[in-house]
Amino acid sequence: MSKTIPINRELTAADIDRLSVFGERFDRLMTLEVRPLTGGLPAGIVVPTYLACREAQGEPSSTLAARKLLAAIRPGSDVVIATGAGVSPKLPLGETDGPPGAVALARSLALGFGANVTLVAQEEHMPAIDACVRVIEDLASSRGVIATAIFPKGQAEGLAAAANIFNRQNPAALIFVERDGPNEAGHYHGVRGDRRPPGTVADIYRLADEAKKRNVLTVGIGDGGNEIGFGKIRQAVAGLLPRGGRSQPDETGVVTVTETDVLVSASVSNWGAYAISGALAIALGDETLAHSGDREHAFIVACIAAGALDGATARPALAVDGIDWRGHSGVAELMRSIAVAANSKSETKNAATASGETELLILSVLDDAQATGGCHS
Image (cartoon, one colour):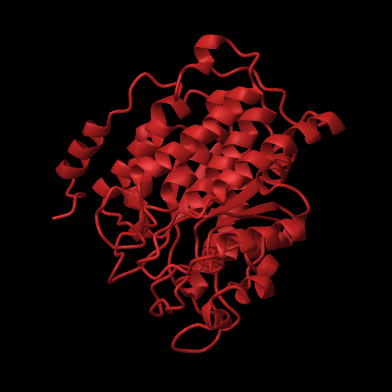
């Protein structure tokens, strides 16, 4: 059961030092390079990219993100989390990296802060997000609210949608998980350097622009440099990518120009979100806010059932970025174990509970998807 949280309390120097100790552990886990060499995803860039991020920010990314969120969010605050990557023809309903991380973080914010979280994505990516929300909605709704909203395509439509979201909700923070940002020419690319076909990507980065105007906290989570947030270290990342980060066929750049206040660079974007959830669990003294291995399995099953594909292979495999679900569940469970160790004074029964949930109805997720036509034919 979630505790009563002293939101917006001032962290002491000792609190920050303690968070940093565990933040180092989260950051090491989230930057394990496990992706296969096949599939075209660049090898050898994960740790150097993280180190460039670390040099720019000066402390563990998970710690920094947790501290900033703790300072910005109050009980009942609105928070927007944007996600969704991949376009037709290879990934018509998106990929499995993004929705699980976004929903896991939404759960942590809803339970830990009583926040009202809106998950924003373009229409094609929403089935996977909705499927992940169904896995956790009963528990998360016990404290906060998790809702979804479709962000439209088109330049004028994107500008209007971003302004409307801020005017209507006045969010305390914006978080982007595995969400493409434009390059200097306004084009979107995959990490391999391939340009997204014109008109296929919604301009969700407009939310970051609007947040900057209004002095609202932004956090970007990504793994390749093309995602919102990496404008913060654009030149450093471009130098690490094949061909100097030049894209195809236009020879502009893979790395986005869109910056965020905090950048979390991970091996898999989902893992960056899980590291933040773990850091929040420590900061708020409640390890049940951390993600878990069994919930991770359920999320990946839910994404595939809803039509998302593994981004590395474009296949309906229980995998993310070419890594089998067992690897992701293991990373999630190790991160949860860090939060449990940090909160070791908690009751033994809580520390021994993997997820804080008695059952994750994976089979019912599949049944629901089949009933609504969401499974792969």
